[in-house]
Image (cartoon, rainbow, N blue to C red; front, side, top):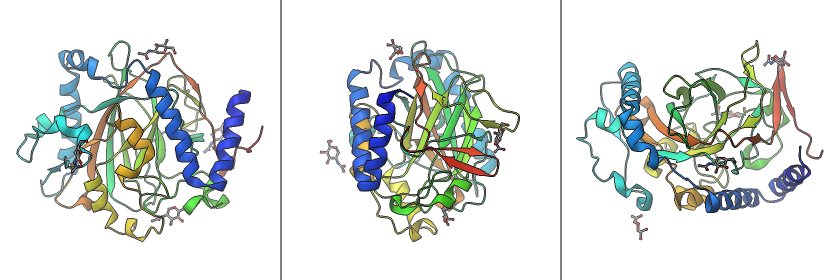
Length: 339
Ligand SMILES: *[C@@H]1O[C@H](CO)[C@@H](O)[C@H](O)[C@H]1NC(C)=O
Ligand SMILES: *[C@@H]1O[C@H](CO)[C@@H](O)[C@H](O)[C@H]1NC(C)=O
Ligand SMILES: *[C@@H]1O[C@H](CO)[C@@H](O)[C@H](O)[C@H]1NC(C)=O
Ligand SMILES: CC(=O)N[C@H]1CO[C@H](CO)[C@@H](O)[C@@H]1O
């Protein structure tokens, strides 16, 4: 670990302990610094090439397959476009009568940033698996992610994509931290809502997870990291912490409001932060739109949600993630705060 990174970790850890909000401000500043110098913040420049190669069609078929398998009572609603209109105005042509395939081929994209922090909850050694739910309760969420090379606009096959998010009451697995950033060493034993998938020939990977809950200072979000150098181990775990980009995905406020009305989300005593108060989301919204496209897989949100998003990745820019803990057989081990 570089001296400067160690210093930042120690600094961040102190801030988390002293004042949870300060950590978010620190991350927001890193994200702002990255976006200020980034050559690209979205994949918009790739859209003609992606369509010409039929990748939009492939994505639409993938999403339709999930809907056909899972949709209850054949009812599919679509994303509400009313909130945070600054970034969503280009979607104005879509309404409840838009054919599904048109909706499914709508790509929402942004660039995962090498300088963004992975936040204080990155865990190494997690499992390769499509379904990361384990015994957690909440609204089923199918996440369809596609990864493209930001330089060539080509899909990136056979690379490892990792997601992690908190459970319906706002707790992350695998880290010694509980509600409102209080110490919770017993959480090191847990692995829920974390996992890796390898991308297919279209650069796509799907996860079965749950709609994330909220925790102090943050709106609902899912973390995504891409690991170009990862090697799977015999026990279907990945230790590699070299990341070519990390980022976070967000949800429409209207959808989160519906989810939060349901138990167990509604039992979470941590304060709610809406999208328009989340500092990290607001920074991203200055240049891009990291809110997922989605359909509801039924007429009630509890029937589940299919959400999708495309990322641009710069495969030549890699770095080491700050590992909060490493999961081993039988339990996790937290990274000591100073090195
Ligand atoms: C979320 O995870 C924590 C830690 O494992 C657990 O105590 C809590 O019950 C979980 N929430 C739900 C709704 O199961
Ligand atoms: C990709 O990363 C390399 C190495 O850090 C950098 O030189 C290049 O400008 C980046 N490309 C884009 C499109 O940001
Ligand atoms: C997976 O294998 C590695 C290497 O043998 C080991 O250190 C680790 O504890 C194993 N993890 C799990 C979850 O079994
Ligand atoms: C309802 C709503 O959020 N309206 C906003 C749409 O965007 C403009 C420009 O940013 C805002 O001024 C409105 O308040």
